[in-house]
Image (tube, rainbow, N blue to C red; front, side, top):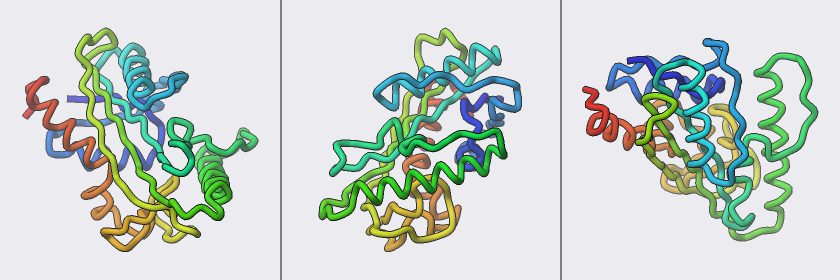
Length: 209
């Protein structure tokens, strides 16, 4: 079965392809099908994920899955939250998409460190909400949520991952997310937890083996 992934983030696609391998699902990024990104006007992860999944399913005419995820920081009242990807305002050029993404990540991390300066409460968590629909009008979307708790480090550490990974320290592992290899991250991450829960739902509701 093929699922359209309502994202063009190569890191997210690689993670989810690995996580959904047990069901033999083929994930294809919506950009490869010429589908543009959906609007994300909502205040919660689940609402935005549903909007993205329905948008991709409608454009592709087939099943779709969307992940809306972000970083929730207690001391910042839950920010950056659904605005995690564009926490810092930067100028958008017409250059290489991945170069722009790296620049955005760097600006987001710099702003987060600035906002956290002098704060003793460093508690935070990554949240991933996966929503899958069989078609754009599916009245029974599957929803799975995963949370990965950690702390905001005082400086970036590690070269792996993407987004806020260099700043999220996982006490139980003694490393930031960016210091973990792909296998360790896929075993413990918020997206991994959400994906495992989604696999259960797909087996039970969509009767996939």
